[in-house]
Image (cartoon, rainbow, N blue to C red):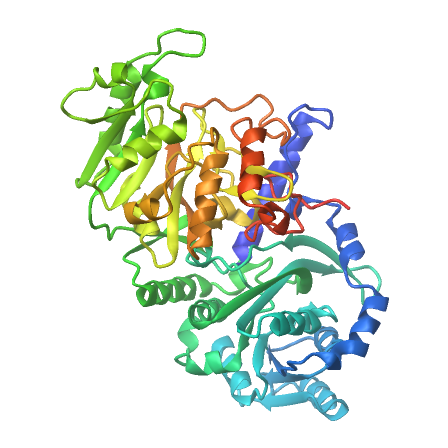
Length: 604
């Protein structure tokens, strides 16, 4: 995780350089995301719980119908006494006080530390001290804390970090709203000590999505404050030192598989201290994490029945699955009408685009059990040769009418939608897309789409109260983005239509595309019907689809950069799905600007 932080800092340097080159008056300014926003510290102070709110919580904390006990497990190893004090005070000062603070001392040879933890135990009956004979490693030290836990939930807190006073109150409130919750986590940030003693400067927020199983295939997207029902942990095979450095990730993967409900609280309530010994800034402090991370991922893949390899993303501790277990036929529906017909001004369009598509598809596709279905008007179909299955539609048929016509002729187990102006930039695209789509719980998969010049067209579509919008539009292809999201699989509320992959059975079951739509919002409507069935939409960066589209002049200006999401189609979406956009996008954190596709801090 530490080098992901360092990678994000590199992003910050690139962003600063870009902003400096463009200047404040530039008409296409580089978007400053939440990680790089210097105004975040003021934002945090404005949005943290007030002293009046904390007093109110203390008064009503005993009114909850469900009153679980939380066991906060903190392994201590050569812990500085000032770190211990800050951490312990933050736990014992919770507005919801039904808790157990378990201090696992793995440094018994340090008398000052032993004396300090003993004093805490004497001062507060909620403190339990576990003294080990020696340091057993972070995993076994944590196991010792779990053994001593008497609470309903176990929370895992690092010895050099601290939490806000309202954290457990927010967790209890969520549990009372949804008693089936077995797993909770919240947003967090990094902190450095301020100039005045006892103060901290807040920076680099992690505004996380709701639980995202496909993101978890690649990295620990949960991190802190991971809280799990103890009965779930007790079912887990006891891990050993082989998971040191990734013990939390391993536990998060195993327990999230078993949890009835996973709850994300979108409030920054955990604070990760930046220090020399913290992986937040120094990944070399735990070099063994590289191996334990891959070991945790491999075990998770095996449990989920995922066939494939683990490949590097270029970011330390962030890996992607390379899927190869593909069975059955794939029907590739190719829309040729815009490329073989006439342009809006009546000019004949170049016919060689189809030949280019076929050639590039053959070069990049290694899967043999595939059929190409070319959809066009009668005049278009007359030009096809025997290599292709022609699907004829009316000359004035709309985009989704054409795609539905192609899907109706499909014989494959899966249907992949393309157009004749695009091509895959990466190998084995069908294996990756269909492999991802075939995972348990996934209904739709899609690639990362690029503009003709190589800039990012979309890596997911957010459905927010302000817009239905493409994410990360205009970034260079190799730009990692906020929290390095452009280098990892993502769960999203919607994707674009180019490259959209779905099982034929599901496509038919939900009635295909709604032909009333004319723009990319039609794909968002399709994806929402998939979500309504309890399935997920997953985007993969291991497949890149280069389109023939040219990026807009002001590709970073949210108000201008998405003409392919028409206002009339968004109005139609709202008519079909009243209240959906107002409820927010579970995969696009509510603390982010809901009108910006660049993960920027919401103002106000």
